[in-house]
Image (cartoon, rainbow, N blue to C red; front, side):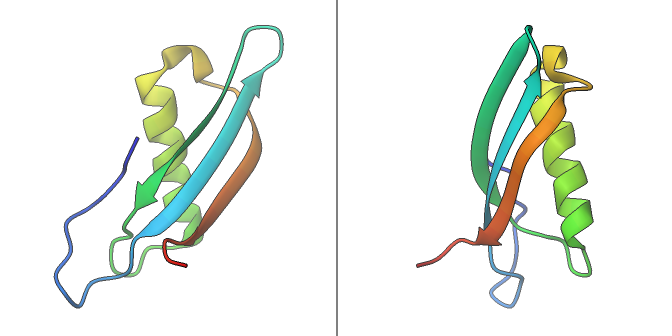
Amino acid sequence: MSTVRPTGSEGPSPLFWVLSVDKPGLVSTTRSGTYTPRPGATREDAYQEICQEVTASHPALRGATVLFFSLELNRL
C-alpha cells in the first residue's frame, strides 16, 4: 500500500513507513508503504493518516492495537 501525495520538485521527501497491528485471537497484519507529507504536517498527522488508511482497507482491524510504527526517510 502506498500513501503518496503528488508534490512539486520543492516538496517534502517521501517517507517509508511500517505499521504492525493486532487484535489478539482475531487478526494481525504488518503493512508498509510510502508517504509524502503535506507542508506543515507532523509525525502524528502521518501516523493518524496511515492508521486510518490501513484500517479503512481492512475493517476487521478497526480498534486493533498498534504493535510497531516506523516512519523514516525513503532513501539509503
